[in-house]
Amino acid sequence: MKIKSVCSILNDWCPPSNAEDFDNVGLLVGNPEIECTGVLISLDTTIAIIEEAIEKQCNFIVGFHPIIFSGLKKLTPDSYIQKTIIKAIEHKIAIYAIHTALDNHKDGVSQTMAKKIGLHHTKVFIPQKGNLLKLNTYVPHQHSEKVLAALHHAGAGKIGDYDQCSFTSHGTGRFRGNQQSHPAIGIPQEKSNVSETQIQIVFHKQYHRQIINALIESHPYEEVAYEVYNLENPSHETGLGIIGSFKEPISENDFLQLLKTKFQSPMIRHSQLLNKNIQHVVLIGGSGSFAIEHLTRAKVDAFVTADLKYHHFFQAENKMLFCDIGHYESEQFTQNLIYDFLTTKLSNFAVHLSKIRTNPVYYFL
Image (cartoon, rainbow, N blue to C red; front, side, top):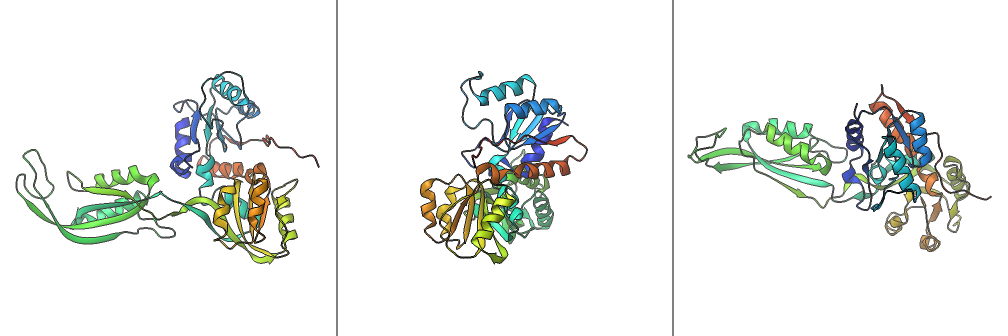
């Protein structure tokens, strides 16, 4: 199996198009055409991770965080980033980053956090916008079911917990082919009137190419008329953060102890205790301060994330509990999530979970 084949599996699971605009995901280092000897999964990519890959005879590293985040103007051993990349290239090791493409997956980073503390009735907290498209096309009536089936098979018509969704209406299509045309219905240079079905169907942008291919392959016309346009509707299948609830409320102290235990956090920074129970919770893995403005509309009891600054804690405004459990601590189980996925997809292939703890933060207690 070539490295590009493993990349394709990862891209189908967490499409790079779902990543945030500021991010750098996908294959960052290496030749996708070479044979993959093994996969090593880690949270970060460091010199130690490269050495572990060499030891385990893995020439493909799947990391959560991107080793290249902003542009590089040179490759000299002046920083840990450049040293890591140079060593990877020297040993022909490819590096892939999944980062916010997995953050935006409904069963991704934040959902993993929610499962750890036992939340129920979970859903995406900030649904992603700009991911839904709509196809509008016209098909001879007798061929409409065949074309619809092909579009559904390609991934169109999925809305939340529903699939095979579409809207159809009927009308008359008119056309005339020239001398070079080969119409499926009618005769060249003669105007044709055909009973047609208009098909309107929603799809996620990651399926754009395959849905248009399915339309053209299944459509009887030589020239297929269609439109694709963006929808304002947010996609509840993708987005940042998870909101959920405990079956029964728990005290603030029990909640903090639960976080400390489940995420193995040496310490938890939090806002003022309010002497109220915790039931409804929002979780965002990694740096989640961007979500604070959304919390007032959510009516939650606690917000769990990382990298909160001093002034962020004031924004709790004595209405909810803000908890900073640490960046690494909030994302540490992400590599297990990637490992579980790839070992299912590559059951007869060497997939390894890194044994190295890459957390650069230490605590003096």
